[in-house]
Length: 179
Image (cartoon, rainbow, N blue to C red; front, side, top):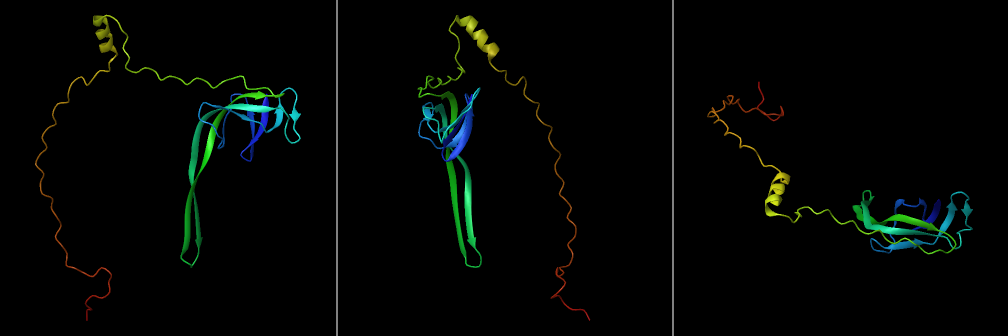
């Protein structure tokens, strides 16, 4: 099943579990937002709105509120010493479509629970002797042996510089004229 929704002056074709980037919508990450302007609902049979479908909506979960790349608007008028430089970053909302609703139904799904990060240094509680061996086995091994010291380099000989030539004008002009 799919739907075409309108938000932020643009139209998007969405299906369940789609992740899309839309113009900024109010809502913090994890909240469920509802889009009421549904233009088309499709699947086995297609329903077209005139201009929208009454009672249809799309529920989505806000994943992230962010800002796009910087756009630089540089304007210059020639020969008038007139320049203007402005930067702009468009705000967007990253959403995941949870479900497509028809006939005025309310969203049934709630926001997904956030994943907990994996424990990094949590050691299991157990006997001290077995726990220390397990910790030693799991711990990354350090360097096996240090490198032998490098051989002493021979004393550097002073470099020979070529004898200097007489100063000549490099451009070929403004020098002493012969003749």
